Image (cartoon, rainbow, N blue to C red; front, side, top):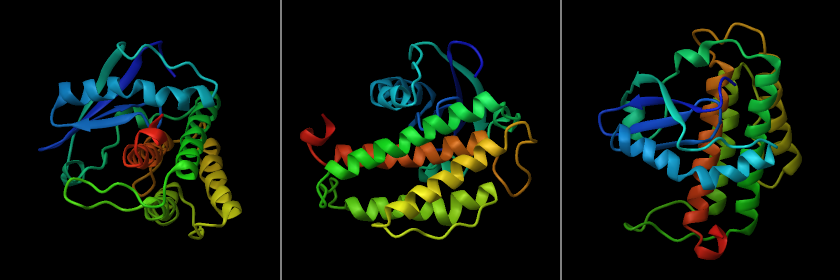
Length: 223
């Protein structure tokens, strides 16, 4: 992963901009414009730092952000999902980069597990009374990985049951192994995601919901 700073791509939608740290899967935040998205990304550095530590990595100074690409957004962006692939993400992974990416992705999953194990089953509702509860959110994350994200890595995986810990771990192992196996190869094709983007997108989805559960669980869970 090049340099000591934080390489960031911006995905510019009509109503929302995503700022994503390309080399740090899961560290991705959105806001109404470029500066707001970058500031939100910086503000989440303390929440992302435990992920880096779990992967035995040191998070760079969050002020050392370098915007390396600006990508046109789409309806997906405005809906609330980072959907554009950066040019840098089409570069082949080295074996060391693939190992670091998967260590960070596993740390994202571990954080989700810790959060869900301590969160109440019924979460605080949003200002309009909406929002899924804990198990529904976890089911959504598992389903997205099995039914959509894994397929973008060329995998066909069964949808694990919520209480089947072994199946959930097997799914994560398969995704991690697919990313590592892609080291040194051409990055994706017309149907498959480049492994760098796959790690970023999956990590974003995991942490976005982990942080949602924390925020809707109350101060005790956030601490």
